Figure 1: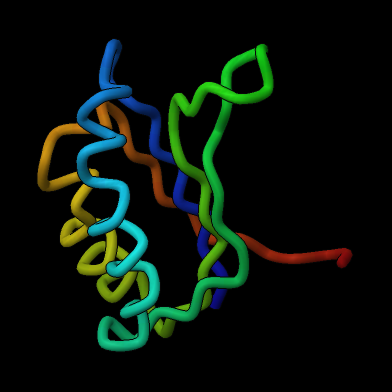
Figure 2: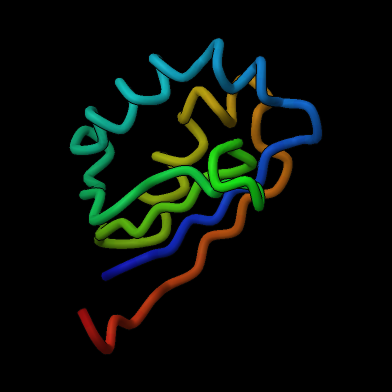
Length: 95
C-alpha cells in the first residue's frame, strides 16, 4: 500500500535541519529495516525554489504502523525539525 508523508518544518528550523541532514539521509537509506520502501522523497521548498521548509515522501508499506515507526524514528522528527506531520494512504492512478 502507498502512503504520503507530508512534514512541514518548524519556523526557523533551517539550522537544525542542516545539523541533522546526514543522519536523516542515513535513516532514509535504512528504510528497509522498518519494512518501508521509499518510492520518492525530497524537500518541500519555499517560493525561492531552494530553501527547504519541509519534506514529502511517497512510501510503500504493508500498513500505517510501519510508516509511523519509520516517521517517528526519523532524525528530523526526533530532533524537532518538523512541526506538523501528516500521513495519508494514497491510491496511485497515474505514473
